[in-house]
Length: 177
Image (tube, rainbow, N blue to C red; front, side, top):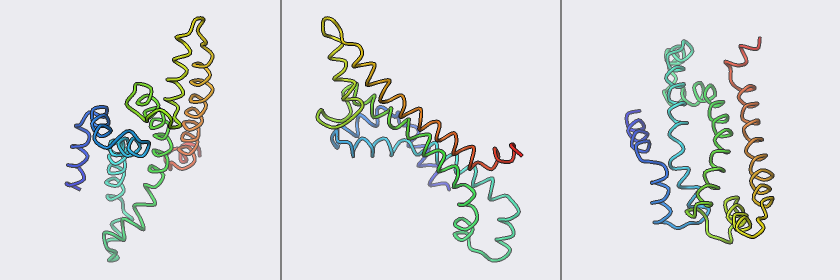
């Protein structure tokens, strides 16, 4: 727990954008490296939430009973605590997927992300921005790529994440009864 706390604090103390820029300058601007850079920085919030829920579950009676029955710590974690925190992992993954998509889009749009020629929402926005510079400006290409492409994807991921939270979170399930 101390090692994980130290690692979480260390990663959280590094500014996200600065880390991603430095990472991409060292390893390159491929989609794999962008995903890896975002993944290396975005796990901290999820791990704090799961750690808090694990500490809460650890103090409940069923864990005390499992310890009294002689089940090992690893067995308690795998058989008892993990199933009770699994919903948090699924929900957070779904809700953070839209943030990762937007992060990659913004990084590419400002010129830090993937290189031209790679399929990306950010590349689409950069190309649409060029159309805005024409005379007369062709604004619907920019609006179409942003609102017809990115908006429905991010909105549907958020709605799906909210539905998963409502279905899987035991606290919301108990409130509906």
